[in-house]
Length: 206
Image (cartoon, rainbow, N blue to C red; front, side):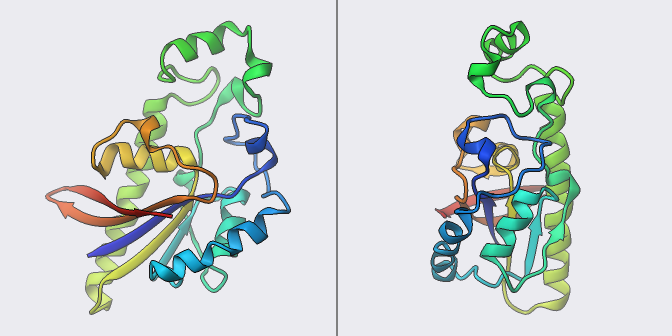
């Protein structure tokens, strides 16, 4: 069995200003290192302080979060774990987009329309889930060949990445936005293969 923890990166300036931060490569807030370090006790309690495999998005905010939470582990960088490209909405917040007709259409669609000049929700989810499936199967294969005990893996990614993966593979079944998680928080998961698919059962929160 594979135990997995998926963690959203810590807070950035854009996060606290409620901006759409996708391709903008922001660092963590200076205050986040101390806040995130306190969470290492939770990792220890969950038995996830020293994962067999650590993966991360290439974005700076994820790499910095991984370095604080797992200082003894070198992350495998997975390019397709990066956040959605918000296109013309990038680095803007609700107040700045108020009155924008494209933004209103996107809101009215329940967030399902493509971002103007960016990605569609469908293409983003497909990108993330393909990369997740490849990575998980590689971890499972490595575990089966080299380890006699259950494997543990950690992923430090984006809120959208977690929501996309859990809408596709998570149990209990929930919609995309129902899997929202705060900065520095995440889920503990048990991963099983079901035929050619994956099933991620939530066993706890982080």
